[in-house]
Image 1 (cartoon, rainbow, N blue to C red):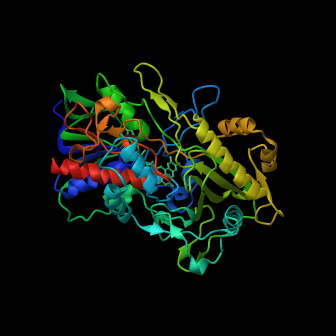
Image 2 (cartoon, rainbow, N blue to C red):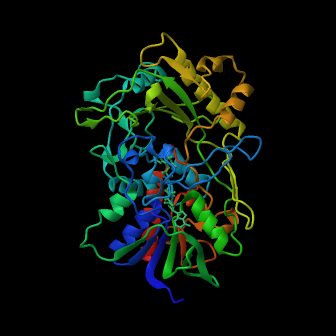
Image 3 (cartoon, helix red, strand yellow):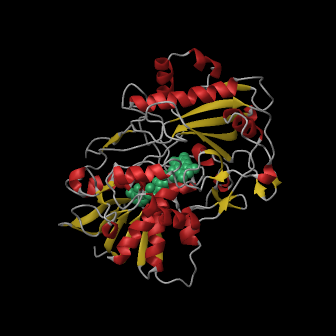
Length: 494
Ligand SMILES: Cc1cc2nc3c(=O)[nH]c(=O)nc-3n(C[C@H](O)[C@H](O)[C@H](O)COP(=O)(O)OP(=O)(O)OC[C@H]3O[C@@H](n4cnc5c(N)ncnc54)[C@H](O)[C@@H]3O)c2cc1C
C-alpha cells in the first residue's frame, strides 16, 4: 500500500503533540496529527473547572492501565489515569498550570547532563508555553479557606478582592500561591482547542487530524523512519515522525518499532501523593465574585512548604484542596504531594509480555522521610484546634479512619500506610529520557539543534513527557509544552 504522504506525522495530540503540530503547520508544513481518542466533544463534567471530572471519567482515559505505585509487590496496582482524547491528558487533568522551580532545571542541567536545558535556557520556552492558553483563577471555597489557613499557620487571608499571593505560573512559586487554570469563562481549554482548533483558517500549512486512530508501530527502513502504521492497517508516510503519545504510549510504540530500544523505560519518575478526606459543610453553589469564577471542585489555592529531611528543598511539599468531590457526603480532598522525589521506577516493555509499570514512588528512604514529615504536618494542622463547620472530620481512608491516628503511628507504620494508600496524582515521565549521549542512558538527544531526535535513527523524534530528564515541581503540562516548543524549533532549523 503506497500510503498517504505528509511532511510530518505527529502521533498523539496531548500538550507535546499539539505544540509540535501547530508550529510545523505554521511554518508551512502539511502535518498529520494521529490520536487514539475519539473526535467527540468533551462531556459536560470535563467542561467546567472541576479538578475531578477527569479523575472520575473513564471514557476519555486509557482503560485497564495498571501501574504499581512503588515496586510490583506487595502493593496492589490501582488503575492509572492517562488521557486518551484530542488534547491528551489536558482534556482530563486538573488544569493547574505551573512551570516548576529553578532548581528543577538546574538538576536537568547538572545531574542529567542536559547542559543547554538549565533555568536561563528554559525560561523563554516556559514563557512561550504559558502564553498559548487562556488563564483563569477560581474562588476559594470554605474548605479551601479553612485548610489553607491551618496549614499555612494563618498566613492565609481570605480576602478575595486583594489576592496578593504569587501565581502558580511563577517559577519558584512557594508559600501560598493562586492556582492558574487553563480555562476561560469557567470553561476548560485543552491544548487541542488552544493550538489546533483555534488556529486561524488563513494560516499557512495544514493539520489533518486522524481521531479514533491507534498507531501500532513506526515504519523504519534501515535507520530511517518512513511513516507509521495504524491498528487498522492504514499506512501514513512522511519525512519526519514525531512521537508524542505520552509517558506510556511513546515508550510502548518505540519498543514495538525498533529492534533494540536502548534504555527505553529503564528509568521513570512520578510524584507520590496522599489524599486526606475532609467532611465539610454542605455543598456550595457556584458563584462569581470580582471576576473570578467559583466552581466547587476547582483548585484555587496551593500551599508549598519545605519538608524535613536531608534532601529537603524549599516548597517540596505541595498541599491543595479539591472541594465537594462527593457532594452528597460533603466530602472534600486535601491532596499532599512530594514535588522533587529522588525515587525512580521502571517500565518493562519486553515484547510478548504484559506491559509492567513500576512508578517507584517512595522507594528512596530520603523521599519517605520527606513525604512522611509533610503528611504529619498537614495531619496535625487539619486536626488541631476546634473542629469547625468547614472541617468537621478528617479521614485517611475510605473506611473512615480518623487522621488523628497518624500521630500514634511509628515512622515505619506511616510509611506502610502511605505506600498502601496512593493518592491520585499521575505525573509519569522520563521513559525516553533526553541526554547528551546514548552511552549516558539517554534515548533522545538534548543537543538543541537535534533535540528530541532518537539516537541511531534519522527522521524520528520524541516530544512529550517521556523525554523529560526529571520531574518539575508541579504539574507537567507547561514543562512538556516548553520542551516540545524547543524540540520543534530544532526540527524546523534542520
Ligand atoms: C488525572 C491527571 C491530572 C493531571 N493534572 C495536571 C495538572 O493539573 N496540571 C499539570 O500541569 N499537569 C497535570 N497532569 C499531567 C499532564 O496532564 C501530563 O503530564 C501531560 O498531559 C503529558 O503530556 P504528553 O504530551 O506527554 O502526553 P498526553 O497528555 O498523555 O497525550 C498523549 C496522547 O497520545 C495518545 N496516544 C497514545 N498512544 C497512542 C497511539 N499508539 N496512537 C495514537 N495516539 C496515541 C493518547 O491517547 C493521548 O491523547 C495530570 C495528569 C493526569 C492524568
